[in-house]
Length: 142
Length: 125
Image 1 (cartoon, rainbow over the protein chains, first blue to last red):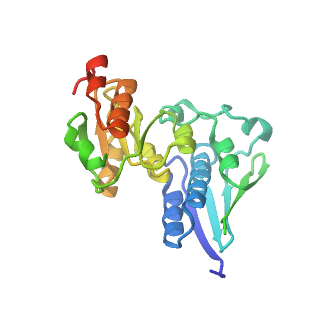
Image 2 (cartoon, rainbow over the protein chains, first blue to last red):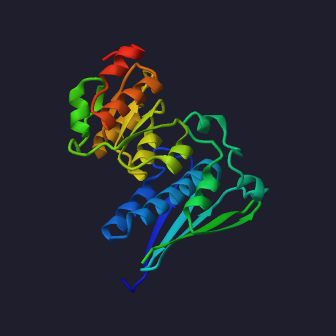
């Protein structure tokens, strides 16, 4: 597999019934491509957390996934308010999720920590009032 | 023990039978916070929880857990039911508490017999 495959997804806002569809689709495609299960699991977890964050906090956005033989590269670009204090947001247990979201079982403050834990590289760029862009890479073991 | 065998034990109410009766169950996982479940849920585990919504199903499928057991009388909401039927996801339920349910399932899965649990905890079979 020498070519790069590009997948694009639109994540809509406040739509919990569809949240997770992009991650599920990527998972399915990686399986078809024969990517090792451990790498698929990492991608599925990291991307689902990101996708949920976009729905909860950020008015949705777009996810672009690039896949080649060495790496799965995910970029999540949202239209949200930005993150005022990234360091705090990265702390396990810190959450600004509203009550209606907590009632669904989210809001444990594990989103960003899980994304970091399950990706091999993660970069967060955020601008208040403009949005947040998260890039995560999962390397495919040889 | 497989999902089909679990169903035949008659210790849980079947909400949606699913499409993989032959799938082997390998453990039990308990948690209601979806983000924790996302990071910790084990492949082929039975997930015992009270969260019955569409996101529970998404987390289950993304982590490759095998089926959901709603304990404490929890129910799957309507959107979740539709999705479970569409995707053939096995969902069970029980009025019993999470701990007793998980212990009972653990004994059946790991030791092939959960009868003693029923005796000691009074969990209904």
